[in-house]
Each structure stands twice: as structure tokens, then as C-alpha cells.
Length: 100
Image 1 (tube, rainbow, N blue to C red):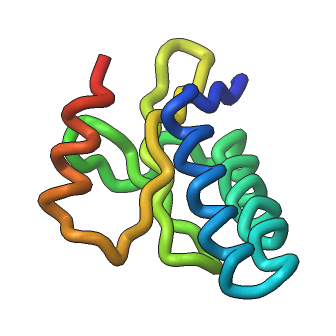
Image 2 (cartoon, rainbow, N blue to C red; image 1 turned 30 degrees about the vertical axis):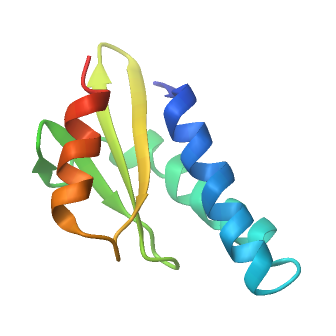
């Protein structure tokens, strides 16, 4: 399987990394390393995660973030990487907007 991180999800990554980098120098890089490690685990575990709003949701092991993805043939498409601390209604609306 291949993994494709869509543009909006890449923007989510940049936003999260910038937030954590402002908290402590080097934490933004650690955030990215951790999230990419979580994403890499999808090669083995894609499809086993709970489905919400039409997406599978992978929870990060270290940060309060969720990776929302769909499986299309042999491609794992990542649509969003969102902070779990925000209002759930905002997350639902964001996911509706990103739906293909």
C-alpha cells in the first residue's frame, strides 16, 4: 500500500508543528517525527481503526491529534490531521468540507 497525504492534511501538519515549536524549540520537529511514525504504522494497520464521519481515525500515541484517512484500492489517503482538543462539532464540519 502507498500513503498519500493530501494538501489540507499537510497544512494541518505545518500548523501543528508551528504550534509546538512556539511552545519549545525542537518540539515541532518531535511532533512531526511522532505523527509520521503514526502514519507509517498505517502500512500494517490501515483499516482497523474506528470509522467516524466516513473516515478511519488513527489516534496519535504521543500528541492529542487524530489522523483521518480513507482507503482507496491500494492507496491510503490522509485527509486531515486534527487536534483532538478542539470542539468536536468543528472537527465534524472540517471533515465534511474535506470529503471527496
